[in-house]
Length: 412
Image 1 (spheres, rainbow, N blue to C red):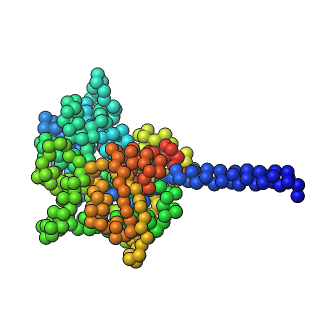
Image 2 (cartoon, helix red, strand yellow; image 1 turned 180 degrees about the horizontal axis):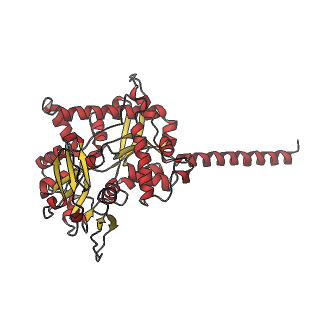
Image 3 (spheres, rainbow, N blue to C red; image 1 turned 45 degrees about the vertical axis):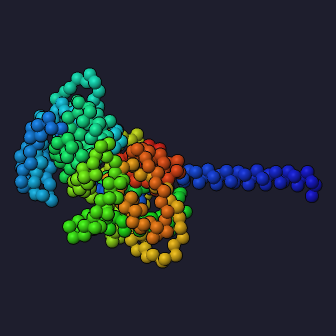
């Protein structure tokens, strides 16, 4: 064959090969954007608190047993008591939440609009206060910030900020979010689909180790009085990894953590022995998607992403295949070592199990080396998963779901 023809053929082959590589890379990059929820972190851990200057009795009362009156109420089955809310006292109140996309903001919005039946609008200096509205300031992400923001009277905050406000500031813990929304989804475990699909065994091992840590940690908390040595060890890990204001003494930290543990419920899934360990989480996420769209937190709904329903979206977004395998995983003793970067919210008591697992060498037992990527909030965790700097992240369900839907990271 003529050398010129050979040269042309060679160039064509190179171009075709290059195009093939380009398409392969493009497909991989498109897939890399998918993010999935693969487990739970906790199902509670927040509460509505009020400053000492607030007349809590004017806002609500607690009655033993059920209530058949006309005022809005919530029944706490676990304690056989009913919270009765006096709507007229809530009108014109200014509440604090930790962020526009935080789960606490979503929950307060739900409480105000669906339980109290009032409007829920942002507050700024000079806002004309209306008695039919509860106003919010979504920059209240700590007890310190609330204490130093005069106009905010009550706030919905996560632990340990609630316990801190109660112990150091004399604030009243009015009602926990688990009473308002029993068993609700709070923080979740999310992961990069491209990394997990090419590291299936490693993902399963991570979840198996994490589930072991959660179960062990819950046992230690429950057996505080019978196994004080293990409890003190856990407490030390908590004190070293949870954020507190400067000047908080070790004794105060322990007191705050103990009170926070009365609220926080640690979980890795709904039921590790179930056929689908994340079945309830899928339903929760479907309901969350509907709420986020109705409240204007997301610009698209499930059908915009090609799904028949929010439940169908949740079935793909929440991938329970890894936790299903983790439930039956048996250590072989010769697991290959893998390095995983995990994004976490710095100093968050909700995410304590990852620190406990590392301190107790549980991940090491499963052949996993963890590097933590400390982030200031859920949006930071979402970005770390989005840009590939972390493979797995601990994050609130709302900010993760808002990011996934608005960016179309999960489609039919």
